[in-house]
Image (cartoon, rainbow, N blue to C red; front, side, top):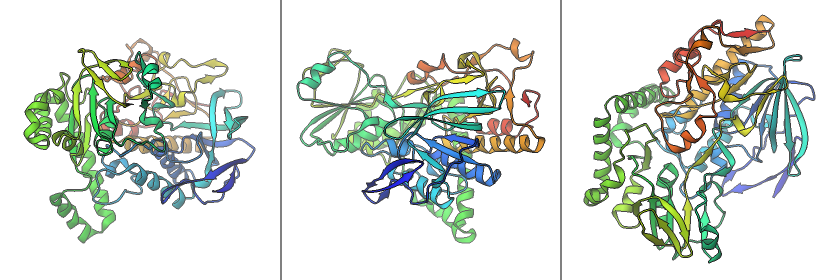
Length: 525
């Protein structure tokens, strides 16, 4: 184990097989004086933010604050078996550095390496302050400064960092806890020598040989875990509360698609091919989403047609588990990589039950329909615990705490009455990173405009006519329980730009991003 000193914090250099955990770049000495920009979060989006900052605002002094000891965000935190993307990598990856050609889905370790390679190539790694956990964010209009209270290192030593502009690129869920489903009887279940595992905190070594496993949940994590765990254990049952839409996606391009893009590759080169591939994928995803929302009956037929082809002889038997009452894309559509999930069900390696889990028993779990399933291990793939406060940290402006539910989103990335602050939020139906990159680029245009005009603060403020408009929830038409739990405490939106979040319509979003910065709602000082 080799160690190096990073911002006064000794960070162990570790290895996950052949994957490097930290960059070998020299640490960047953050100046003691106020920084121009601070980005919170060194995940996939945070590294993109640093790249665009260096390109668009050269010379700006900045740092990335990362609460953990490694970059990579979600792709370094999660290490459960089979973790992978469930969005096509051509637009989930960076626009300035496309992921590998001819590959739809990627394993978590490959995405982690891709993030670190991007950081190293662009001299971003040395700007990251590891093990700096932000616990408070306070703005002063007197000095036009954000003061960040941080806990540094393993001993959580308190410190402060000041900056003029603050960008929260911290995702949308709590990193230190998940939705664990604290069902009655859990303690007795564990006391009997059995295990309860959560994918967000997967242990390094888990021996499932000869064991009976129950996976609780039906989201992307459960769909990924079932085929992986079913090959390691004696038997596996997936328990879902209600039916789920699942469709298949190949990990790599099919032969016809490879031949199509291979022509562009051969005549125009790989970079031009990848650029066109990204352009086409974005429009394809937009079209499919629009079609599914406007023609739900057709969408249901298409989804089930693909599923039934994968399930083959078991399609009729299993159909009740994959025909929800809600319409496609009112909740997220799960992707089954290469049909592995359906194959596990078809071949009998795994089985599925649709009924709510109500309690643990000393020997297993009990369902709402009265059935009991005996098992040795329960995996609670019951979801992420979302937070409306970016990074789960409250904001304070001039000594006054900000209550987000009283505020309105501005272009889906700033908050009314909060100066020099941007939170990065991605799309729901398509790639998170796609919207993140547009948000960063717009932010740096704003920073450059402020610099050229001699301004040091920009704050969105509602106009008199805006105050009369009925406020809407930040996200509408997307109704999974994990989202509904938090929307009441989130910022609101109005009926017109710039007070809307277009996180389900990329092209309306582009129109909002391209509108003039001087729109009568941003106030400069």
